[in-house]
Length: 125
Image 1 (cartoon, rainbow, N blue to C red):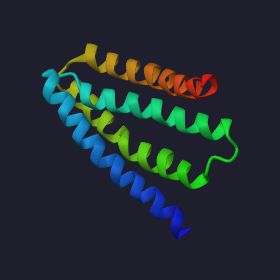
Image 2: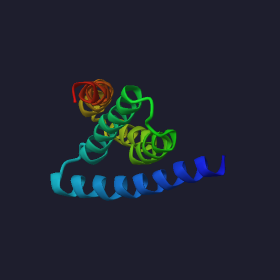
Image 3: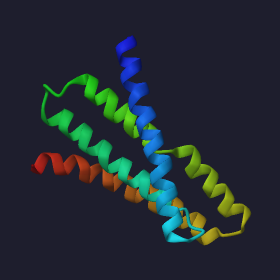
Image 4: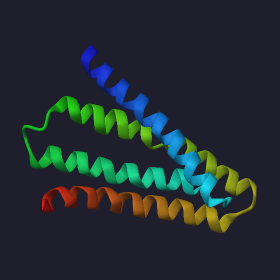
């Protein structure tokens, strides 16, 4: 159990730092009030978790420790629902209903599609 906790914690630590840096870099370079940083990071994380689960599904010998480290730890730390929710609340407070609805719809639709394509990619290769 301790090994699993360390795998998840280490993956989450790395994923959280990478999320913070990536999201800030993207948002600073876009220069928009739309939260592109979080959006792109979350979509990328969805794609990555699709690849991890696809590889685990394709190869029964895929180490469970790697799945914990990559999917639960890294992708769990890399993506963020709480920031997504907070950014949506900020859009609502600003009265930006259009971007609020677009952010939610695109995040859900493209996020699920990205996960699907991540799994699909592992089946093709």
